[in-house]
Image 1 (spheres, one colour):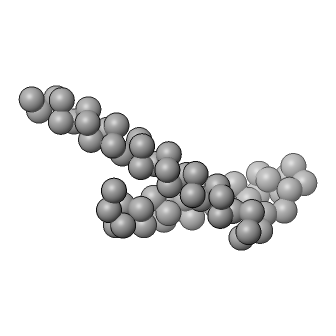
Image 2: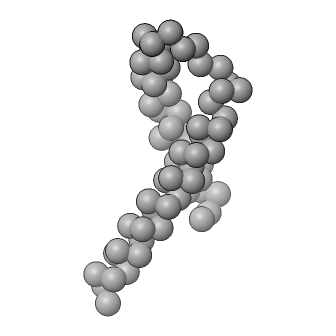
Length: 63
């Protein structure tokens, strides 16, 4: 996976971060940058796996 894709995935996560933060605050959870890091790493891993799955599916369709 390229660094460009990883950066795109991080931008997507950051786009939705305010919404996630608002939902967590409603539940009484205050989000800090230290708390976010493990979830951002997990999000990037999930997005990488989803990207590779979609890429493999697209390659199968073109065969």
